[in-house]
Image (cartoon, rainbow, N blue to C red; front, side, top):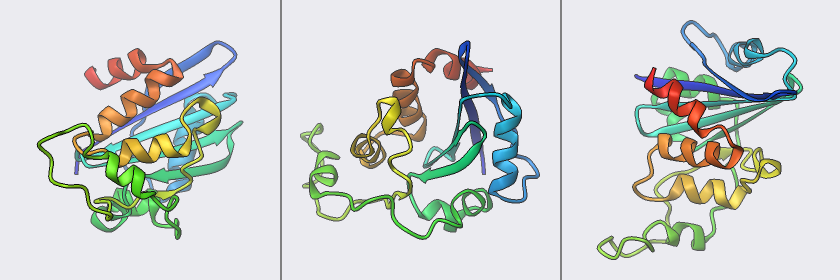
Amino acid sequence: MSYFAAAAVRGGDGWQTAAVDLTGVADVEDVADRLRDVDPDADLSLLFVESDDAYLAILRLDEGDDLRVFGSDSVFAEESRLGALLLGEIEEPALEIDDDVADKTSDDDTDAAPPTNEPRVEPVGDADLLTDLGVPAHRLLDLCTHDGLLPADVTAEICQTLGCADEVDELREA
């Protein structure tokens, strides 16, 4: 399973980014420790973990504490060790996905199959974790359920809103 893990941390000097190696982590707290190591004094730390062009997990720490986690699809926890590690302790869906959000997945594509009331993914965790940063829960859920958007596209969209998209792109290309 291939993955890309990028930290975006905000301190007094604005956003910093760094690639994070998740090799050998035993649990989500080990992942949080590696995120803390990027900048132990950061006011806000985010970790974007993209896996196999299919799944996205976002972790958030405020001042190094209060870990919050969101996953684009509960299947990630069932299909991989990394997914189970990141999302395994989450028991509830992110939010009920409105029919409007599910229907929007094919509004932009006139050749798409007719919309169904059943979304193809089941986001889990804290969908509100980016609300105060300009990405409300409904927008995050819309991005995750939009047909044709890869996890990298979702990360890029979020980072564009945050103001650190170029830095994350540089990590991806390194």
